[in-house]
Image (cartoon, rainbow, N blue to C red; front, side):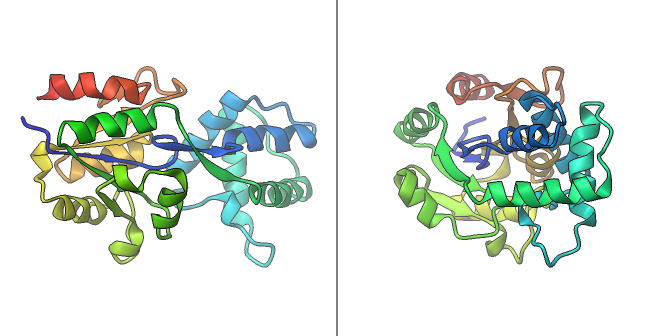
Length: 236
């Protein structure tokens, strides 16, 4: 097939949080005497996001119901075989994580700019398909990515529906004037990016930067965006 469009997820694909969620999670756990490694925290975050989609502890506010967020954090710990703390401690940890999360910003991976530039040189349409519930234009301008991404689609553009629902993928395809069969989507979550892209008829590529899913066999898998041009050549 001829590949005309390549779409990307945002976090852990083009950018990472700084400091990252799994680092913050491990640090907060250590503050409360819980020995959670950064790698186990990341594994737990993926497991929690797969089971409790749309639930992010950083979105919790003190006047909101904490139960689903406590379940999320307990799932992170369970992935590492750690028993959950008592509820009083769990609430203190949730508050601390929300407090620390205010420090977070976005930082590009080293392979982001060269990969996007290489795709643009080949005449491939590039796009961002993000579940971030906000306009991405300001942050793209701040990071210098605006000119390297032809289109940007978020849940704001499809009545609040994010990945893995297919409308957000179809909206991206429409804006790129590309068919599903000539389009690739690169993302880090196989249960969201992979399932959604495949459901829309696109070719999904999972980027596993931290080697969390080494046995993933249902999708094309890369560990760096530097591997993407070679993979595209094989797919064509």
